[in-house]
Image 1 (tube, rainbow, N blue to C red):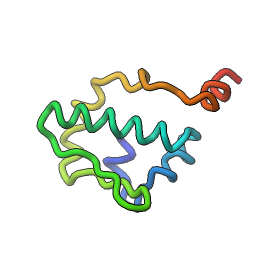
Image 2 (image 1 turned 30 degrees about the vertical axis):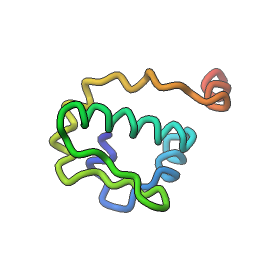
Image 3 (image 1 turned 135 degrees about the vertical axis):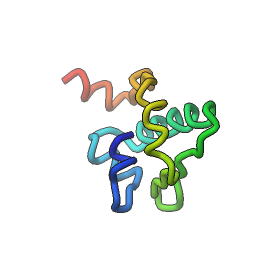
Image 4 (image 1 turned 90 degrees about the vertical axis):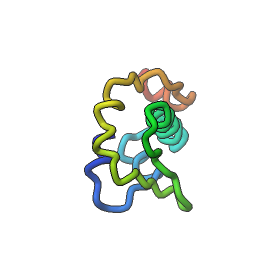
Length: 87
């Protein structure tokens, strides 16, 4: 979330997946969870555009306090990620 608010260069789902060493599905699930919280608080959502480009809203920094209160560790890991996590 903090990277989304600070990053000036193009952000992509695949770039985040590589950076955090998780699957693209995990990044998309996290973004879905972020958007759920934003939507519940009548805030603009993060868009995923063609090519997996992530486009946070202009006012995303203002929403950080809402997002940092949530527990984003409840998402489900893929089988591959669970294996990697155990090692």
